[in-house]
Amino acid sequence: MSQSVLQSFQRHLHARGLRPSTQEVYVACIARLLAWAPSPSASVSSAEAYTYLVEQGNRLRLTASWYNVIFTAVVRWFEMRGVALDLHGLQPQRRHRQPPRWLTAADVRRLLASVPDRRYRLAFQVVVATGLRVSELTAIRITDIDPEQPLLRIRCGKGGDGRLVILPDLLRERLRAYWRTWRPRDIFFERRPGHDPQELCRKTINEHLRRAETAAGLTEHVTIHRLRHTYAIHSLRAGMDIVTLQQQMGHRCISSTVQYLTPDLRRPPAQPIDLLARLEIEP
Image (cartoon, rainbow, N blue to C red; front, side):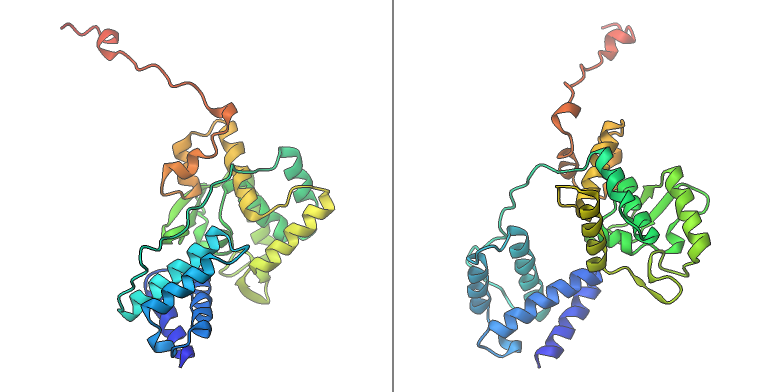
């Protein structure tokens, strides 16, 4: 019974436009709720959901981010069932935003030079040069790369939003060279070029990063998200304006982008231009 309930929930999430990876996480959250609940899977009550969320909130080592994932999964599951959910004022936990951490130019060079697999080395270069999320990186299709303009189409970013990302000239040349060598048919970065036309596995991506981090002798833990932070910081320092960076990163709110304005990049506000005086307009 619970399996059919979970399948129905996944179809509901798919219909709402959530990415497959997000669907899997939410379904896994509800599977744990159903395994915990004393009631049959089809009749878990609002009170039981409330108790479960309170227990999850009191768990040690459960971050606010993961708690909020569980919270959202429960809300969406009750939404699918059409059952009222009374959580007695329970809300998602407030995340304490930490300052972004990034790699220096020298560390980036050492890291990428320590990736022996050309495919993964180029994939990491894509993130460093464009700021893509890992889900956006693995989802790149051949047709997403504009053959005439320096643009990459992101079909489904965070929240289901699409956008166009600027591709630097050097990266375009390296992507072309990779395509000429491996000839991927649909997914650009295949698991096994020519043999397994599936998206790269996130676990394998992280393993390659971890090995490169060790080989490069870096003391900082490196993730795809840290490479994304690295792109943002170095782009601003190279002169990119904050609005362009927001569009490149796929941020809905400018407040998410402003976090990358480190103290050395914050300038005093410009004085307003007195156009009446400049244009010599009489009173």
